Image (tube, rainbow, N blue to C red; front, side, top):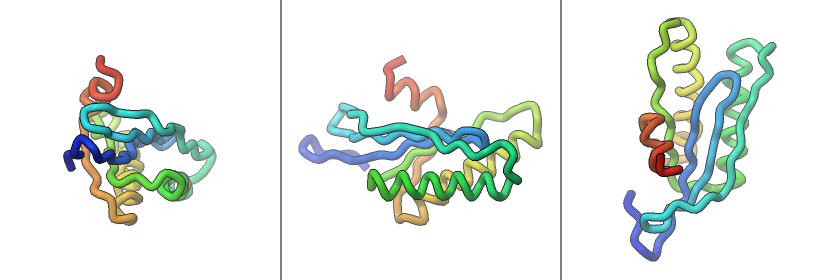
Length: 122
């Protein structure tokens, strides 16, 4: 969705991970991004995988309720040499895509370097 010059769009960005799922909310005003909020969802390392995924779900649902974004963007994952770790990261990423989709948001996927360049300019 391309915002008109007089219309802003609130976007939730998610960097998924099992230990720390980072999130940030920005307002897109034309070509300008304005910071709204950021944080992370950090399930306890001692929790079983299913409960960690549930904690990520619940944490992102709270972010959606608090900041009411119109769209979401999730970082694409890079392939690790450890297949099991990549699979687990993929599960966290699935939850990170599912939560905004369940709230009716369009979910886009972007390469991590594109996100960082767009947001911080480098």
